Image 1 (tube, rainbow, N blue to C red):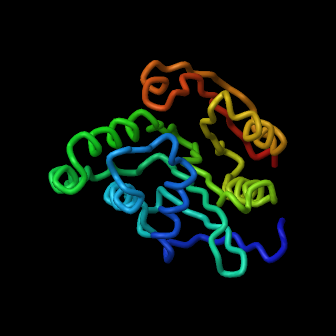
Image 2: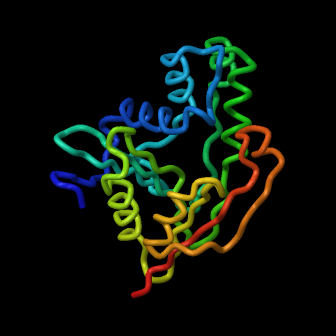
Length: 201
């Protein structure tokens, strides 16, 4: 693990976490009609991650009190999630086109979890801290959450060779490959690999 790096579960710096995730996935969720601040506000309006939700765990990597990375684990919901009631206000604030685009993109990335599955919804590391072992440390923290009867899963773009190599190094195995027209149109990446890791103990 990198020097002075602390991995903890925290929601106290929600704005910084959201900005990090938006920056990491900017190319996928880019809306040319909105400023960076407006994009962040739109992401915030869809953000439904709280420390009160037992089916989600957000971990952050802290170095010298600065967020250097984050990872979100999701479990199968014990009860249906409450739908967002912000659609009209989102459309008024950000425009119907921008709001619908983000909604469709989020739906296209949605993964239906099975029993005994923990899913990595996102993992992101700040650009100037990449290739320093932070992503690996976050993944190991996620693996520490998995019991013997569970599996840890994720999707990764087939083009992302560096990420695939890292996942394989940590014991993840490719179990499926999906080619989706909708994802290809929305993200310019039609081929995605599904990987999983099981606790060997």
